[in-house]
Length: 137
Image 1 (cartoon, rainbow, N blue to C red):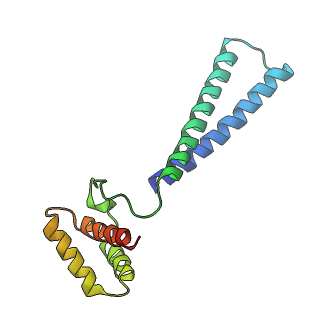
Image 2: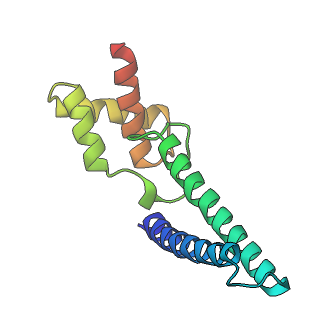
Image 3: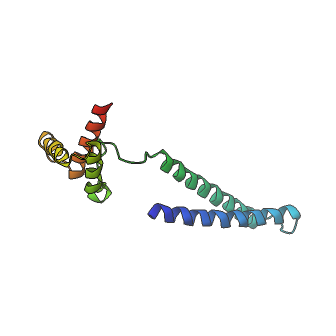
């Protein structure tokens, strides 16, 4: 949600800056605006603002597209539990992989808890899902 707000605000500022820059440049070309230090610095600052927002906006889009959709890698540590996928979603995914065997899913997660103690709960589910997917290949 926060990134979406930044993108909307940046796009709006980029649009308005582009309009203002186009207007100022057109007035300079038409000769209705004298070229002096104030108009030069104003135009230069508009160009810098426009270029910076353009770069940041499309860098953000490129960064979002580079992130894989779906589950995150197992070796990635979560900084807080709010970033972890919901356990129910992971449980459903594992049960579907096991053809509806929820007891088998619980057994596999219990074994992972014994093998890898002191890990976050969602990690065990992700680990078992990754193991099952790997074993199926």
